[in-house]
Image (cartoon, rainbow, N blue to C red; front, side, top):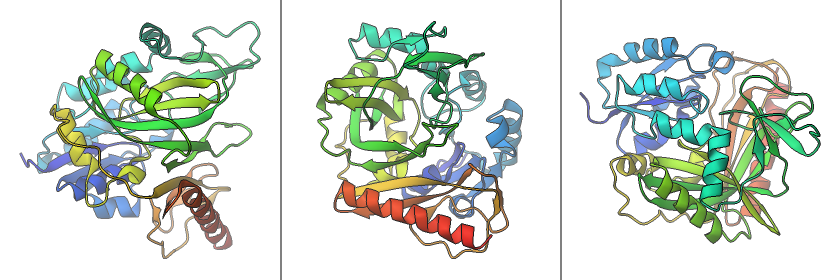
Length: 365
């Protein structure tokens, strides 16, 4: 076994692979995209074909793990892609060590009714939630159990089906707290403000985030995270999503895995991946890393079907598809980043860079 080789499994494994490299680990990446910078960072890589369509499946993962078995990894770190399939996490854990949250923890946190009950027990404000569509659905949202990225969220209307639940639509600024947990305690790493890249069919599709969240007292939010961490055995990197308004806040969900905003919380000269591994081993005996200034990231979604041209990608882009890759309208094209002295400046710069990438790709296709 190579003590530094770790399997990274996620819809997109690039950010975790980069952090793992900075922490001195050898990332063996399994993801949907096989982007050019992911391949460059990975010690070895296996792609899950049709991942965006099918999601994570036991057969595809077993085949990918078998292809990377020669590297004898010490275990697996799971990112986005398992929120709605804790049974798959249990399948993995029966064969390999998972550095992160257990299948039981993910199942409990991603069961919307069980989570609403937990929030009530812990006196944490949470929107009204029900498994059945209300008779008057105005003011309610339909969500998919275990959904991620916001694309699954929309007005309740006539929407129904397996895995759909309903939650009262409440106003507020989306704010997330990133934290590490050791099974009993949480260490808050910082806050971010999020926004949507809305479409008519996907009004809550995730757009991006900026750190730190401006003009927000995160003390009460952090106290909620601590109560959750004391009640549920959380391990490693996690995040908590809130809606914050003038009259208070509500906790929407806990994401029991490394967040899509990992990049903007990566400390200079440090590695969140390394801290994740330490926290999974029960070690939180360190101060939260100092994060100077502000940082932002945004997802660039293709505006139409396109074939990626040969581009000289600037260093503020990530998740870069190979030239010749076919991208469907609405699919992620790449990620853009920005750093600045303030959150306002970082948000403005990342928006400008997103628009620049769209101009490039639209002009060359």
